[in-house]
Image (cartoon, rainbow, N blue to C red):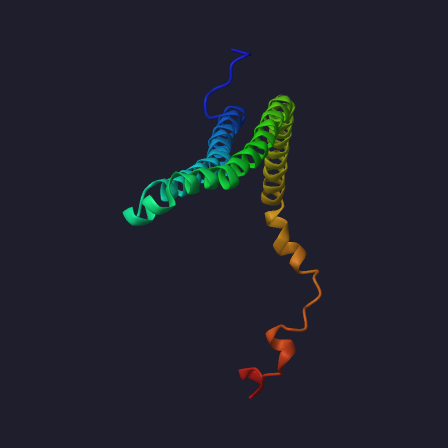
Length: 174
């Protein structure tokens, strides 16, 4: 069957590896999005809520009756309203930035996947070519293996050989 590939071929393994990398990338993207956007947003909201509870909950009844509603109202107007207004502006800018980053991400995802597929195909071709070259080198070296002993006869003796290093007299010379 000309159009089908058997499982376990390099093309099938490469496509499975690409799909696995994409799944890992998606999980990493979700995890980083949670860690970098939603976690700080939630922690800031909790911090503001805790600060509100510290002021709103009476800690000492005498103090509460003396200071009363005026102090709480002034604290709300002077501290928390500007905090909410400035915080809202910052988070609105962040949300707009996330929206446009997501659009950019969606726009570049397909071209990057195509580039990844091209690189994977090129990698498969290079691997097949190197395997072919390796098999040819091994077959050629096995054909010439018998000639290596014959060709060693013509090699120049190296200076580190046993007899060249020290002149040890043979037993016949004794």
